[in-house]
Length: 376
Image (cartoon, rainbow, N blue to C red):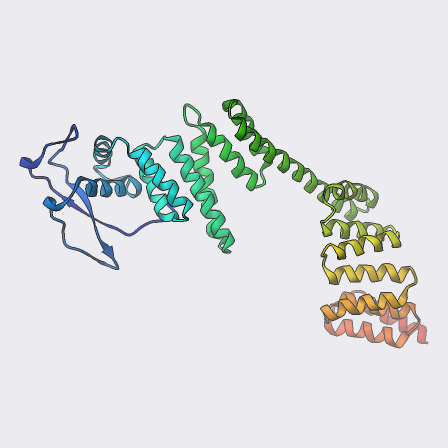
């Protein structure tokens, strides 16, 4: 399905029998009118062109419109044969032009050119591949502009064209090469591996591209393994198997020591094991790596509180509260800290504030009841 549907106007001119003749060894059929494009804009078009004033190039250009956009046209086959007869080099010429237009980000014109070539030869693998690459590139451009829905539609079109290019006979090695990279971008490493393996067999002498593909595949597989390690670590910690989670995180951090989320997760696991100082060190590293300040300050405050450093814990919680003054988790921990320091009135005030912001908070009522019991 075309992505860019243009607006254009075609006129059809009958060729008088006496003017019918051979054009570059192609015999014109006077019963079939010849198309020509008129200038079109906002509901108006120019006068019907004069046959005597037209060049064959203008007629071919109109026929190419039909190849691109009107595949069900009654005289489609006749126009296709005409183009191939009068312009036998049309594929090479237009293919090069389409690539130039795609590189210049003129996606609409590039699509029209490639669709015209597809109309001329629906099974040409290079045309199918060019359309796939065009849609993929335009999808990336749309995604960068925040147009995710349109980008997804284009990716669907790209995948369809890649699939068509992969089943042509004889096989086109480049189709497997670029389809592999397409699936790598979609995080489908297994599919990319299969496509690259096929490419390695088809293009054994193309050592440059083979090297590029192997490097990209190795990198993607390594990243997939690391992503799995991170996910496994998180799942282990949620299941209460912190030691296994820490083991996965240690493996992950050997290769990605700059990922603050991993340090935060490591601190969380060690905090759950009551390993307060190692947890505090991990949270500090997460903070140094650019981690979320509010949650990290809160976790560091819990650790310092357990280490008996109440003043430092309060400073950390106050820093977090300055960043988010209505965060009930921070306010509640200030209440816990005040309670641990035996400042009951202050603790009561914090927990009552929590209920003002969140009447359904499950912890605050229990802590208020505990404080009031201490007063009696």
